[in-house]
Length: 441
Image (cartoon, rainbow, N blue to C red; front, side):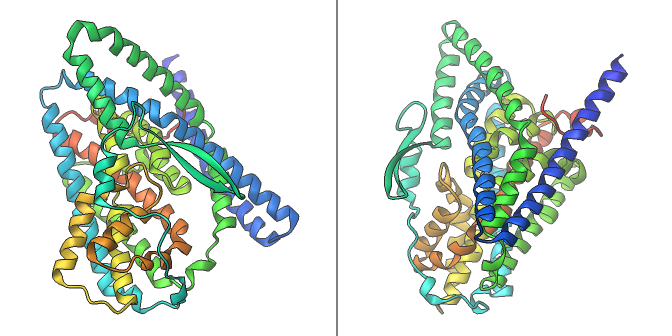
């Protein structure tokens, strides 16, 4: 009976993996069909349908981020009190975040100097204009302090000429608030046990809701891929081909060379890692949102890679806000070099040192914000380069963001796995399990 149950579970997981691959294929076909239809009514309707379905799927994931992070961090604080090396785990995590960012930004700088994308572009200089949002160190410091218990923020956007108030959340603020509340609950002893028990129950409920949403991944994948093909295509890449190529070469080197070498150096199999982490990496690619992918990243890190829940619940959300090798290392480095070359401005050794510093230390400045524009403008302003250069790259940013986010998510699963292995707390039996197909329960 046990063998039959195990066989059924493996069959279900394999079926889910095939469904996701089928969703990608269907999305690609629908996207190509939509571009072929062009501005016809049918093409417009198909594009709007795919966009709406894709956004609903991402919104469902994002809706679970705040309560999942909040309850998971508190639960991890409660669990970490039983670990003798909790402080060491935190320090090792931050060190590995910085180390991988350092390696990644060096690759970005090297590619910028070798390929010289700013000297091989046909983009119109008139496209240079300041972006609507910029990043600063002051905004980062202010963003660390929660404005309210849930880290909620209100903003006004103009949609079809109508001003609308939108609510969003800052994940880094949620982490700060949850750490404080969890530490207080542990500190007060027996009086906090009821709260911790309620939090554990709430966490279980939100995790089950997550599994329901994950079951929709094949549909969401098809919609997001199709929408990306219709909305962006690859036409905009022509004028910035060398820059886009440099970015994707760099992302490929990090994902398929640097990360595997780090895994091998720590006695772990790259094939096993990618087999386990692929659902999160894939979702990051199509959704272009590390925050939206966060619940899935934490799920695969814990249940497939074997990282203990008490540690994963802390490290993965922290990584989703500060560990961005794609958006905060390779991309800003290449972009800064591109802008300097495009405007004919020399960069000195001290400038490259500043690029490394901003990439390693400043990636948390993107926490709770969308895309890499904030990190890019933070890098340009730190170097004294014209912010108008960011406007040159906005046309192809969504296409590049897909690859950047996939690398971000991979790194957010990689570091906790390596730290857990080096600390002797990784569930090696789970990591080395051959039955690595992923499916919602």
